[in-house]
Image 1 (tube, rainbow, N blue to C red):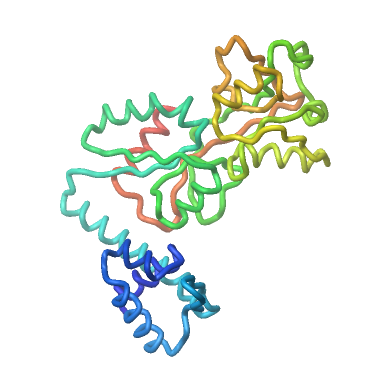
Image 2 (cartoon, rainbow, N blue to C red):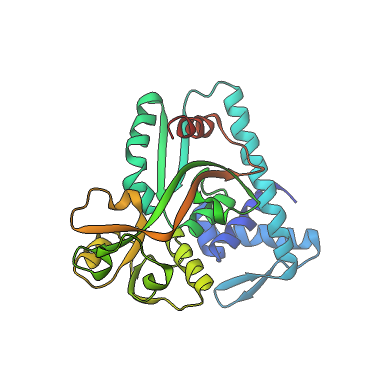
Length: 289
């Protein structure tokens, strides 16, 4: 077993196809097939179930997949650390941010970071909490902003912000006359929510489960301007971070009767190597929050 075979194996599993793996690896598809056949022969195990043009892992392949991810990530971490020990003058930060945070919290921080470290490049990926968490665990991201409530043990994190979730309604909505909104009253209304996979939706689902109710969802969208527009036109209400509704005269935001807060964290793989560039980004966030 060698690293080349493991990389081929990894890409086939990740992409679900020998052909697509060959394209990404920029080698001929037969070469990929031969390498996997040799690996299976060496191990005396079948790693893939082949059916039509699709492939899936056997039980034995599932076990190798766990080890392959760890081995390849360790090799990549070692290579990066060795580069930095040689005095790498440039670096890159790959950070995943949710849409709400990316729209209202991170723009000035990202610009300030670039001003302090102009030699470092920033790659910002927007996604839902679950998607970013998966990308982080699979080393497709170096860092990601997630909610501490949903932090898995595989990740390490530091809290960068505590923010209140507010009930958001149109100015003419009956709830706008109240000072707070109970969970019970919130779920009596038709809701405008993010799709599954975002911390906003996870929170609402948790509140609904605790209240023993089924939310009435009128709209699902991850576009914050669209959520606001729907609310303003009276077609539903929602709950958003306080930062997302500050200074909007056409919306009223109210606290829940029992205030709901979220601790937002910057997270990375617990056993992964945090490069100097990424460590600088983490330190900068903690310094400026």
